[in-house]
Image 1 (cartoon, one colour):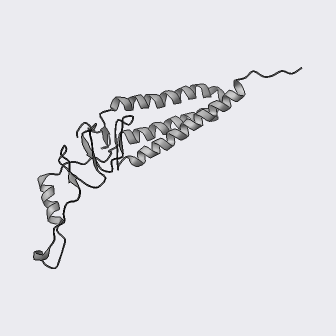
Image 2 (image 1 turned 120 degrees about the vertical axis):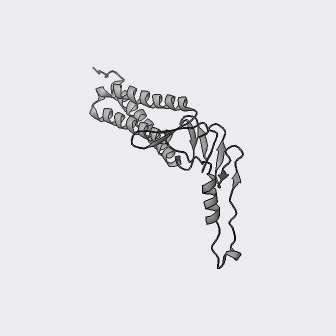
Image 3 (image 1 turned 180 degrees about the horizontal axis):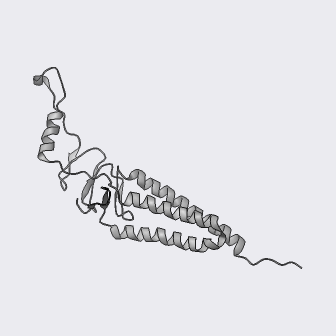
Length: 186
């Protein structure tokens, strides 16, 4: 599909890997690296901060992978048989076949993909596919963000910002209690 690699994995799931897969690997390494670094230092602070760090890292990783491996809403070219069936079904039902009014196709045809683009669809030059509800091309996810993975993208943003805030605040609180030597007053 254009520059997007589509692969069926164990369990019948289909994953979509975009052309910027190396950026997605860098992002995944960053998530796991920051989480691992925090957790390695949080072990000395007790089980609470450590388990919070593990939870933040796991949730960020899961939401990232859910978005990075999902279908952004790629439009596929239709076969001739499917187009004929849709054209036949696209006739509005009236009292008689003589007065039936055919529906006009909506949108424009993509010159690159040769697909009929509905409203909100756009061709991505990086992925070389048309994406329904195209929002943007995200190199850190490795592909486009569209109708089918937009919710997963916003979930990742929310979880990762919450995780970052948790790690930042816990680090500040830990530095406040263990970072300074105790003050001895005579």
